[in-house]
Image 1 (cartoon, helix red, strand yellow):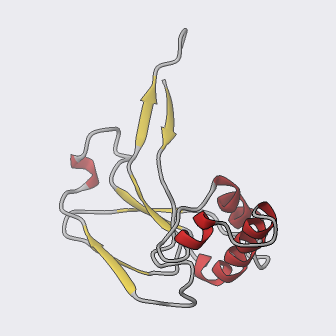
Image 2 (cartoon, rainbow, N blue to C red; image 1 turned 120 degrees about the horizontal axis):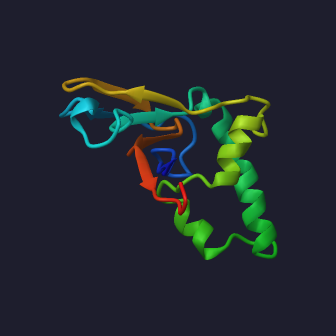
Length: 140
């Protein structure tokens, strides 16, 4: 089968919070090799430098929300302003292409070992990497 990866990237703070809000962290309780799969499970994924592109990304998101809401913020956008929201595929592609401030930013998978602590900025795009999902393809 073909491996696809599940990762819902987000910033760790509300869209309305500018700059660094806090430091977030996680402690790994098991080695990634102890998790099911082919050794590609149980890691942290981040977009290094995305905190510098965040203001431009959020400004573009706000412009798009106004355009689709006929000049005013939609109820969904207003609700999202108070809590972290997931990055869309288009926003992730924009990070990679340099659409936000000219910075071309790609994801980096950080393998985690038992007992390791990861600390990151709350304004950094990140997600837990849950590993490959095997899908059977007819005739494969």
